[in-house]
Amino acid sequence: MHDTWPRLKALDFPAIERERVDTLQLNLGYLCNISCIHCHVNAGPRRTELMDRETMELALAVAEKRGVRQFDLTGGSPEMNPHFRWFVSEARARGIAVMDRLNPSLPDEPGYEWVPEFLAAHQVEVVASLPCYSQANVDEQRGNGVFESSIRCLKRLNELGYGQPGGLPLNLVYNPNGAFLPPAQGKLEADYKRLLKDNFGIEFSALYTLANMPIQRFGSWLVSKGKFDSYLETLVGAHRDQNLASVMCRFLVSVDWRGYLHDCDFNQMLKLPIGGGERAVHLRELLDAEPTRRIGVAGHCYGCTAGQGSSCGGALA
Image 1: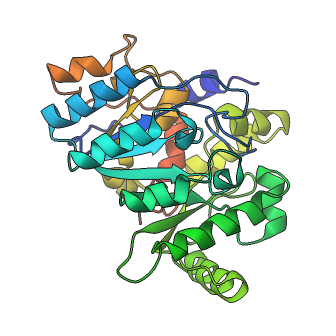
Image 2 (image 1 turned 90 degrees about the vertical axis):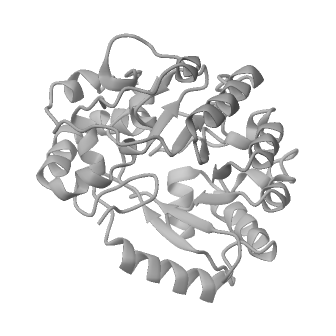
């Protein structure tokens, strides 16, 4: 695995500050049933890092103390954490909205058939990865058979009321299959909706287009292919200042599986503590004080401000 951090930290990025914390984005662990080329987490079936119940209990306490409105659960596959169902049930009982970043091939795995019904029963917003409406492209990125498994899961979510008018939100995520920026989100969403409906009878709420980050597995792939510098130049060249006001780090704090704080999931994967400082800050400190407003930035942040912008909620412009 090539370390891209030395190149990224040498690149300046405009200073930005956190406005408030509406969301705790909690990485429940790096365990996943698949290993994707574009994964910025380097998740996979052999990863053992998983958030424990004590840290989840602490997150619930911090949410009450700080008025956090939403838990954004990510991984890996967050549902593979053995405490997932307990945690979601506790959060929903306290009125905290929950968003689950679902790998839709997971419910095809033995022991995870419960996932769609559980999410629906607890009114969990689903953000499901489907990097293309083409089987060939999805299987190239995510592995053979992943597309068909994902389609089965999305159909089941539709049956449970997801993606229907007035129903539970089902949002899909697109990632480019290479070293280029996503196409216009609105046009691509229209294509997704037409083709998934016509070919599979699938409906969904919205499409989120995300730029690939030059870190971890994707960053290492760029280096090995001799494309790292050119991709970074693409991101920097497409930077738009107007996107700075809407980047996700202004409104959330990212929590790693051990309970340490970061400004976003990408900084977490670079092991950059919240605020960009040297000292690791733990979730328990939010019981006594608000998080720093300063946000740690480096060259990878251009992945969020290039072109139409990119965040965990899709395009910014």
